Amino acid sequence: MASTAPLSLGPVGLEPFESKKQEGTETHRRGSDAESTKTQVGSRVQATALSSTDEKNLDDIYNEEYPDGGLRAWLIVLGAAFTTFSTFGYVNSWGVFQAYYQDTLLKDSAVSNIAWIGSIQYALVFIPALITGHAFDRGHLRVPLAAASALLIAATFLTAECTKYWQFLLCQGFAVGIACGVVYGPMTAVIGHWFKYRRGLATGVTAVGSSVGGTVFPIVARNLIPRVGFPWTLRVIGFILLFSLGTANLLVRRRLPPRPMPGGLLNPAAFKSIPYTVYCFAGVVAFLGLYTVLTYIDVSATSVGVSSDFSFYLVSIANSASLFGRLSSGLATDRFGVINVLAPMSGVAAVMTYIWPLARSRGSFIAVAIVYGYSSGAYVSSFILPIYHMGGIEDVGRRAGMAVTLTAFGAVAGPPISGAINTASGGYRAVGIYAGSVILLAIAMMLFTRWLVLKSVWGKF
Image (cartoon, rainbow, N blue to C red; front, side):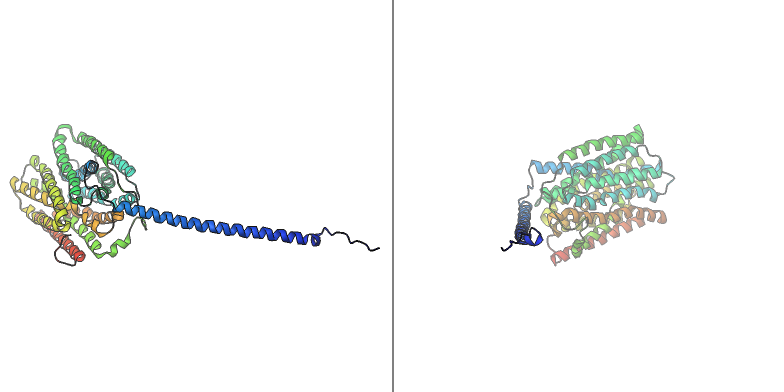
């Protein structure tokens, strides 16, 4: 009888079953991997499609018609004007504080040392633009504006308590300057969101706030210091800033959504453009001389026998005249081109800077203040506008920020250089020659920029 071999349940006996199971599992795994790969590819394609769609939508938004007017757009301009009132208007009043500190609180300090407080203010109005411009391009406006507004008000109240040079340097120099810079920094880009064909006019109206502030703050300081003292004068100014900055925070808004831009805080590629680079350095040179007259006109008037009760008003007169310069240049730049307006107006400012040290009477100082204020106001209000024509609107905050930050080097160095020249020469004639000459050099660089862009000696730019 043949014996029946027992059924093996060992590994050999199970091998055919396991083999089939493994084949099935492997087939399932390969199918899953293929499906997963297909899903990932599909997701990437979908993401790319969505990204392309989003980019197309942003292109459509950025290329649509600008409001260029209307209630909402002009309320934006009003809010921006309150920021220039609170920043440049305040900073442009430095000449009054320079004269007061020289005669009273800081009379033991050198004139050039006191001038550093104002110079740091001027410089720091410009330096933060590098950060605020980039932040604006990325969609940040309201929080930085509110925080800087609070700092500016607080720094003004703290200045009221200062008695020593280093305290004034920290509070009125650094703190006020940084706060003004963060408040003012994005305003040019904000106007660019709402205006295109009437951008010059809107910018000019915005800059009027600076003239009004530069008129109001010196008058407030001159009239209140003898009556209520320096500390309460600064507190009153602080309350004025509380109102103006509060209104600005309520009104100012961006219109366009942020657009992703390659790169970070800086856009070094912008400096590959020779016109952009030349124009940036023209701004540096211009500000080496541009604030000299506003800083020293009242002190120089007092030094030749003009009453100090009157000389205090020269800064206000110059700033009042600049109001008309800013408005008229804003209208003219839209029609004739920015540099075509800024060059001749800056030329008049240079001539008046040469003439200023020759003034000896109240009438001659008034004439200098009016003509200089009118002509210099055009450059201060509109010098950033050519940057709009050197690239796209989506990156204007960063490009403008880099340009404005560079000009800070001129703003911080100009008045102390003038003060040092005054100390060395014993008068203001050499100061006028220095400041007027650097303004003329800046004009030559502006005209060279126009030639680089247009490839022509003359044309609208």
